[in-house]
Image (cartoon, rainbow, N blue to C red; front, side, top):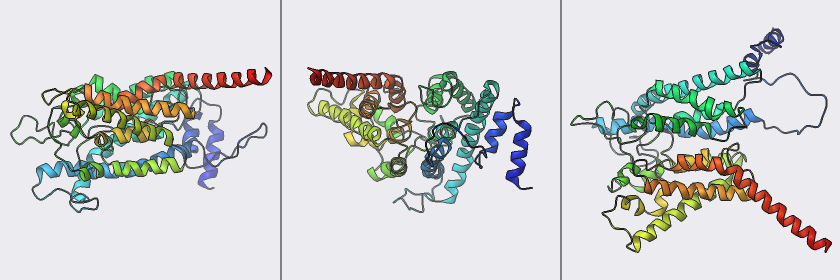
Amino acid sequence: MGLKQKLHTLKQKYKGKKMAPAFNALHTFLYLPNETTHSGSHVRAADDLKRTMNTVIMALIPCLIFGMFNAGYQTNLQTDPNITQATGFFSGEFWNWANFEIGLWKVLPLVLVSYGVGLAVEFLFAIIKGHEVEEGYLVTGMLVPLIMPIDIPLWMLIVAVVFGVVIGKEVFGGTGMNILNPALTIRAFLFFAYPTWMSGDKVWVHGAVETAGQPDAISGETILGSLAQGHEISYSIADMFLGFIPGSVGETSTLLILLGALILIFTKIGSWRIILSTVLGALAMGLLFNGIVDMGWIDSSSKFYGLMNTEFWHHLIIGGFAFGAVYMATDPVTASQTNKGKWIYGFLIGFISILIRVFNPAYPEGVMLAILLMNVFAPTIDHYVIQGNVKKRMKRIKVKTA
């Protein structure tokens, strides 16, 4: 008896029982169900929720692998005198197995905990409610470790994942019903519940927390943190674009994020309107701040000067802006659904992200809060866009009947 036939036999055994949703999820993880519908109209298409989620995961894999190498590289760069500054994307100083070993040891547990805890909560709610296990957490489980500091304690991640899945998703009805991005809900919970582990200059490089306070302590300061304190950028444009900088696990390489954006746009999973409008919003806000500095309305003594004086387009390649614009803002569940609404939604995310960066020195990364804020307003944006279209059509009707 083949494996597929054995699974089908077990499915018939569990059919109608309490654990059926959990077994069906495992049964259909690699195989399609044998059942076909016999009535009603249906859309014939090759894509489904599972394939969509898997495509997004494939677009995230380059960021994950790069993040593993970068985690070790940032540590060894400060602790190993034999490691020198990388000189290019294919530099041997970066793509070194000694770097990967550290990154794998630190990042893989984050991925396993994220998926293990998140899926356990999903299975539990499916069994309790008696519905099928939804595949929506497949992407969330990969996003969560990529937006975390490298040394985040695993117990904190467990608490945050449970909170994010239950409060950010299940209470709204599960996949497709949530109004907030679950991954960002998890990160927001960690930021407000355990701020010392999610901000500052000692959380972004492995070992910096343990050695803090010692004369040879590892510096884990990010570019945004440095600018918020009025310091100069110590990294080249190439380093910032390629990703050879401290930061969350998967957010540093703008180059690979752009590759992921192309995959999402080509497969029509991510909206190019949202990505482009988010970039335009950030550039507009950056230009506005640059203009304020150029006109002399603010001087170098101000605590806001460092980020306001940052070249407007630099905001696109530092911090988590690019990652948020491509993988978070384009979430089809929590984003605007109308075409005009997507332009408004994305522009406001970019605009507010840079606004928060500049005027909140305690938390210079604003893309998370901007996306969560616009998640809440996305239905309102779509409502007014639809109402505007209805009014235009009503006017046309009145003109024709006059």
